[in-house]
Image (cartoon, rainbow, N blue to C red; front, top):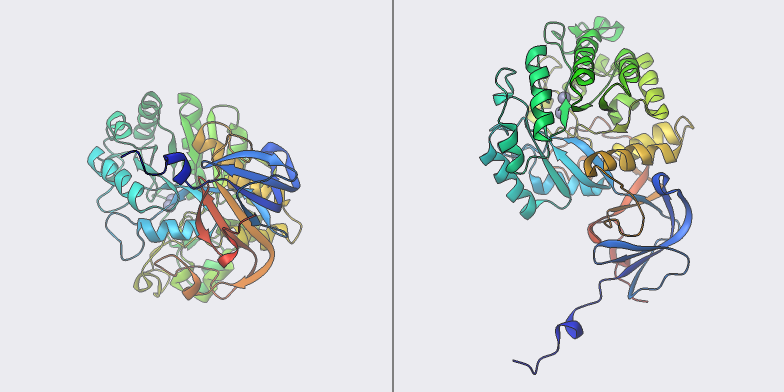
Length: 442
Ligand SMILES: [Zn+2]
Ligand SMILES: [Zn+2]
């Protein structure tokens, strides 16, 4: 068996130069046109006039570190009619996301090691992007008995979360943080007090005009304050997700530096307001609810200033029969992966309210560091997780053009600027919006 070609001779060279893109990575201080050489799934070199076996002509495009979404519902296991790992990860890739954290409020709930290990195996087979499994903070997400976090971690859990419902008992939450800390698991918290959150939209002028029962902002603020106090006391690694009110953002600011605390807000809370509930369509129900413009503006300022560390989408697919209902009956949640960057680029960056570099920091660098627990970005030795974006292109959000299995986007029909045209994970093109350009040889 020695007369065949050697392995070295048959192995196709795997290097690739992305040529001529405007490379923007605030963490690495890159902001200009340069070449990026990829090899063996990693970034080998960043610089001028690089040579490789293959090249990708990216003139006129922007190259960012791949976006990282710490909050997504891929509805697997249990509701694969709404999303699967395949379609959820395809939607993520189409949105420029290269890493995603999957929330545990599935059916069954991800509260046992066997469910975690099953999901990890499915991710390896079915996901186009890096996907991390969040296990539940408590059994059945009932807020009573904590899960066996050490065993969940051994089975492959990346973090624990109470997303969907929140934790109503401060005592359970405190013990959960202490256990998570000893197990070495970050905690992602959905802050909502159910004794206050009795409505379906934000309790304000828009709800009154629409005649729909509202929940006050305090439903979020009271729970956020509790979580922050306990995070500061326990020292657990705590991430507050989907901050949507001015007061909750200010509370996060107060507690920054008093613990291992980070927070995110969502594209929809940064770009939409509760005026949409006047349309009385179930589409616009989401939890936490869309807030008045004053909250939206303060949350935007907190993101710009870094009090809110990053953006997470809370990608929440729902079957049309669960959304095409009156507000009171509709399931809460929006799709998020595919519209996140374009919506924020259009509403905040193009209007001059947020620098593009801060948006890239908030969608890629900061959540990337949180997930990697270390450096993340475009530098020699880093995994080649990248998003190529055409900022000059405009597109209209349409059901048929979305990779998600569901279509509950609050931006349907909206024209957005900025389009992801290519996404790479470990140097592999997992979304190709450019057609035949890729793979051209030098
Ligand atoms: Zn939530
Ligand atoms: Zn969620």
